Amino acid sequence: MAIIPQHTTKTIVAMKKSGEKITVLTAYDYLFGKLLDEAGIDIILVGDSLGNVVQGKSTTLSVTLDEIIYHTKLVRRAVKRALVVADMPFLSYQISEEDAIRNCGRVMKETGAEAIKLEGGEAVAETIHRLTSVGIPVMGHLGLTPQSVHQFGGYQLRGKEKREAQQMKRDAKLLEQSGCFAIVLEKIPSSLASAITKSVSIPTIGIGAGKQCDGQVLVTHDMLGLFEEFTPKFVRKYLNLSQDIRSAFQHYRDDVQKGKFPNEKESFS
Ligand code: KIV
Image (tube, rainbow, N blue to C red; front, side):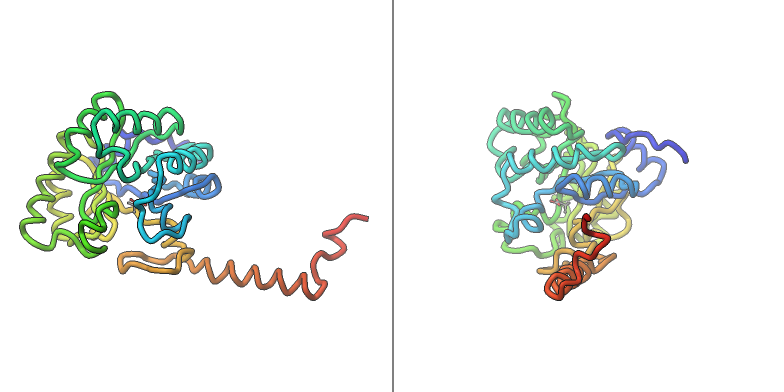
């Protein structure tokens, strides 16, 4: 079997040049980190989506720095090949550049993640410049940035109006100039994502942004059919795991109630 080298931010950027699509999924614990890594996923994102799919909250806003650090450590322990990216939670990088360096630096030091992700364009470009100049690799995030859900007034498609689309194109260039190694584009028209992808030399990673992006990301719990409360239109469900898991639990309950579990082979003499 061919030995696949460990990914770095450089190997990820090189994938855009060679035209190889970049695969990204989220993980929040050791087991999923291991399964994703063994499946050959290129980037494992410890997303603040853990607020939704692990903690059951309606937004990501309350996720804390300590929670991201805890979950990233679990994932990092399992991963041998993929690039591990930790998502910076709301208000951990917006207050001041100094605060951002302290918090992102803490994530890098304590978790072993190879990069961090943060949301926003022009407003965070200077901060990204400072972070990358002190050696902290940054993945940007434009479009429907969930930490701004209340500012947007919901989770609607972004960049439909010309002015917002133009600003997003400028933001993408700014993120590139500030030193980002990749940019997530979330829930924007495919034509806008395609234009941004062509205009920058760093990879774009789409989620609800069409197939012209250099890579794709989904929340793992969505694509496995584990999270049933809401499924966005851009999610493809590869399994319906919740149904299977529920039925395994029911099966176990029946077996115990009917005295069918444990049997002799599962007992000691
Ligand atoms: O938090 C997250 O999982 C994300 C991805 C959906 C890009 O930001």
